[in-house]
Image (cartoon, rainbow, N blue to C red; front, side):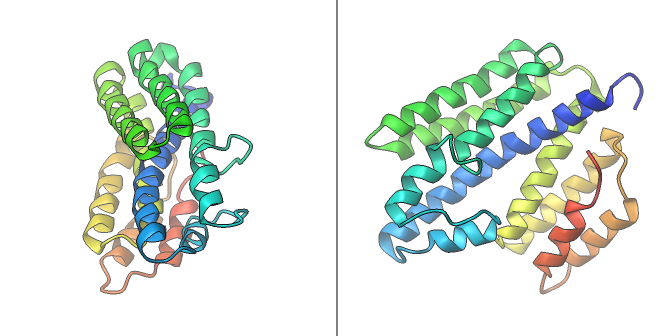
Length: 222
């Protein structure tokens, strides 16, 4: 991995994972919000099951308020955003102050959403902040391997969540293909045979979601 230390690789990888976790779970929270309001009030239980977090919520109102914003809940969106921030701060020199600022703006907008009577509007700003973060990350991180490590974390997290939410197969296959392209560039120690197996499984007419998630979780040790 050249001059990139194991600690830096770990920080960049998990920065990518946590930033993507915030982005995708907010989008799914939007979809779940509509389902709970219009269709099934208890659909949050399925949300928790899919992403493998404990259902600690008393009802839909508790979920809608606590899951995004409760920092005492380690599985909340805001808790994951703080983890992204913790990694970004340590890597400020590598990713640049401007890139870090978009994570800071996302935290500000999460707090605004928590205090707002219309939180979905502010949460949309968080999505925009994360997209801007990735644009700046791509522009400001000069080292190609460092960029690829962060993006590998992003791709693994997105594929994991897409599998858990059983997204349309074309989305899953697209993310698996992106991961295949990214991993060699990141120069991480991963099991190439296992990645090929993942690609084979997602091409099946009926994707074995649990099996692919299991393979993805053990693809590399970072």
